[in-house]
Image 1 (cartoon, rainbow, N blue to C red):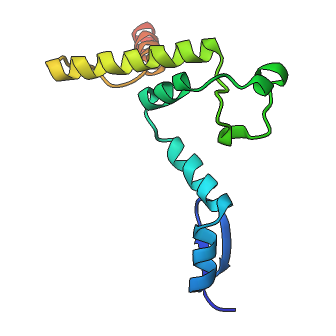
Image 2 (image 1 turned 135 degrees about the vertical axis):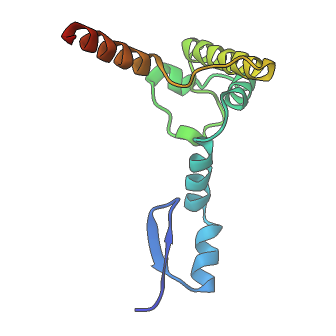
Length: 127
């Protein structure tokens, strides 16, 4: 059967030879899947800047769906989504400023803190 090439972006495998690999790596489906993968790791500021320059997608606003999906050249974000994203960007900027100033910020989330608090309270009640 020969060697097989597995593409992690597309979750597909095919016979590994120069022609097939080149055809796949330059294909539209592979390029879309690769772009979607790397979009997962973009920072919020870049996403916000890109979305603010786009006009709203009329079809998405009317029906809630767009045939183009993530490839649409118009924005699928509502005003609330943009506000949440801008708040996230501001929070990240504040965090970076605090880290530059040398302020010690404990790692973790509110859920972690609540778990630790519940354990301390239960331990204190058992004593």
